[in-house]
Amino acid sequence: MPTYSAPVKDIKFLLHEYFNLQQYNNLPSFAEATPDLIDAILEEAAKVTENVFQPLNLPGDEQGCRLENGKVITPDGFKEAYNQYVEGGWQGLTGDPEYGGQGMPQTLGLVLNELMVSANWGFAMYPGLTKGATESIHTWGTEEQKQKYLPKMYAAEWSGTMNLTEPHCGTDLGLLRTKAEPNDDGSYKISGTKIFISAGDHDLTENVIHLVLAKIPGGPEGVKGISLFIVPRNKINDDGSIGDNNGVSVGSLEEKMGIHSNATCVMNFDEAEGYLLGQEHKGMRAMFTMMNEARLGVAIQGYAIAEVAQQNAAIYANDRIQGRALTGAKNPDAKADPIIVHPDVRRMLMTNRAFIEGARAMAIWAGIQVDITRQHPDEAAKNKAEELLALITPVLKSYMTDQGVEAASRALQCFGGHGYIREWGMEQFLRDSRIAPIYEGTNGIQAMDLIGRKLPANGGAAIRAYFEMIQTFIDANKDNDAMGTYIPLLEKALGRLQAASMWLMQNGMANPDNAGAAAHYYLNLMALVTMGYFWADMARKAREMLDAGEGDTTFLNNKLTTADFFFHHILPETSALKVKIEAGADSVMGLDAGAF
Image 1: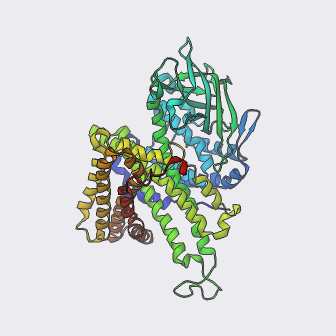
Image 2 (image 1 turned 45 degrees about the horizontal axis):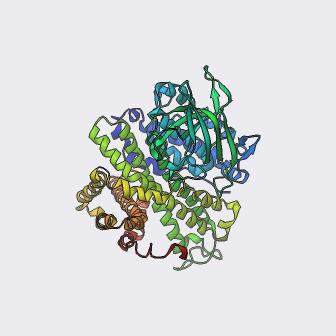
Image 3 (image 1 turned 60 degrees about the horizontal axis):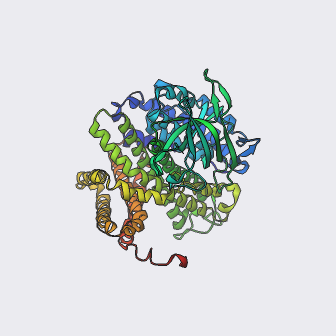
């Protein structure tokens, strides 16, 4: 049976020492988020995720969801656990206080998301989808819609979803067929079928508020004719009570590779009463509010599953007796040493550790950018944060989820044959991890979004700001003896990224296939340079604290050792990625389609 311990110590280091969240107390959501309050929230979140959600993870996967008389039933214990989630007020943690939320920073909400996913990914998705739906309603809804839906959703009494995909179209939403026929009272009749709808139905809340993409007849063709609608599963009476079913039904539950405890539904809308969210034919803009929120959440899922898999692999590696250390017996009184002594096991564990801690820093930084874009009083600061966030979001979503799969696989490998056996829980982590590179925009789409939209946006303002951020750090620390190991390696990696960017500009325009063939490699190159920046900066802070006699010496020295590993064993991959980018598309596109 796998275990989980929330990494509160590392999170506190990032929030308090490294990022020093108190420097943002000029932003409303940070004003009351004192270190003591943040720590209290973290400690309570650790308790509920470790003791309530995590024990349900393996049995929830084994039991899965079931469809009975048109209603989805979640695994045993989920309803009781959800009730504790509701009682704790967790859903409204970052919500607008005007509608019943607690007004905490979005950054803190992302941290909570990590803990919940590590403990129980399937369970975490139910409130996770609600969070995205409330963001869209808060941004695009009328005051009447906000008053009607947000208080109940912040209280976790109602949940939310997003309905994009249809049987015949996934990424190409211009092909969708779901229709929205106008009614005389300003509402719409929504008719169509959506697939792959996470948390589409369940028994955890009294109502499910669907956000549905549909086309109003007579509108523009393609994505320009898509609108977004609020479609409650059950009608809502004038007094706020729940009425009859609203023409919304579950066609079936998908039989999936992983996340079995989350209901992935085929949803049917049969003249369901819906309400326009935002403007007619501007549905993609409104939906992207939810999708961008979701993409950051999915990025976090990548390293969150890696965290719990890594924890269990490290425990096993210290307990499992097998073979002798290459440098001589470390456990001479026994017949063998624990496998933690073997360099190849260490390689896997260190690779995971460097990825997880670097990814966590990147995600929290992204969360801070979200808060700045929403609340900073200075427009220039807001604009810069918006540009950097738009640039980095596809990088985080793609790289962290790809590496989450790899990390789960390495952790399973540490168990040998036992990792392949269900009772240890490792195979579930690997199965669950595999969805993250696929949903909320496949990672190939993320890479194309990065090079096709984000790099050239606003004349390349975002990539210039990104290069400036890292170069400024390099210049400021070149003469810092403690940073001597890291700065030259980071500067070389940055140079590779800049050269690859120039190659793309020159060769991608001449032949678009060159850009398409290079996109995945380019995104990973940017991810490694970004992670290198954060690892170098975290090492700087750790060294400063050690020199000042502050903090936990063991923790800080471990941080420096992990930084060394990243710079010498992972960052060198940037060299190979640059070569792959500049190889072009000739061999990629060379075979006839029939040869595959």
